Image (cartoon, rainbow, N blue to C red; front, side):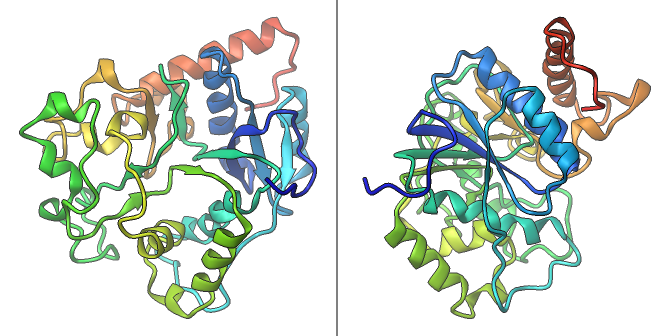
Length: 296
C-alpha cells in the first residue's frame, strides 16, 4: 500500500477513535483500557482535531495513548443539526478512510467499551426503531423497518449471524464501529458525495453518507460486536439480546455513563453499571501505576 503520512505507532493495523473535546475523554480512556485488558495486538490511536485542548493532550500523554491530528470535516452545504448538535462532529469519523499509512483501521466511538472480542473486522447495523420517539428522526425509522426486528424469532442465530442489509428497506449502518481498509480513491468518493449537495438531506451525517454511498456493499457484524444499549430494552430488541454473548457495548444517546455522579452512577440504565465496573478498575490500575488523578 502507498504510504500516507507517518504513522504514530509501529503497527500497521490500529483501532482509532475520534476526540474533539474533553466531554468524551473518560469514555476514550475506558475504551483504551478495555482493549488493553483484552491484550489486543493493536493499539488505540486517538484522532484529534484542532479543537481538542492541551488539557486533553496531557491526559492522553500520561497514559501513553498515541494521538494523531486529523482535519475537521464538514460539508460546505450540510443539514442543520441544531436539534442534535453531536452530528456536526460525526462527519470527521469518515477520516479513517484517508489514513493510508495504515493497512487496516477499526474506528470505534469513544462511548463503546470492549468486552470479550479481540479480532473485529466488520460493521454494525443501526437500530431504526427510534425508541425514544425523537421527533426529528425520519418517519420511516420504525420497528417494522429495522434489521434487528427480523431476528426476533431466531435469537440464537442472531448471536453469530447478522441480518442481511437487504432485509429491511433502509439498509442503514451504525457509525459506532467502522472497519476500513484505507484508500485514497474511496476517500475521494466519500468527499465528492459529501460535497455533491446530498449532505443537506443526511439526517445522521457519516452514517447516512456511508449507508447511501455503499448501499448493499458493506458486510454487517452480528449485534454482539456493536451492541447498542437500547437493543436490550423491553419493547425494542430484547428477544435477541444475551448479556453473556455481548462483546462490545455501545452507549448511544444521552446520558453517557460518565455523566452520572454520586449515588446515580450506573442507575440510568442497567448496562451503565458495566461501564462503571470497567472504569473503576481502570482508575485503580492508574493509581497503582502512579498516574496522577486528573478528573478523567
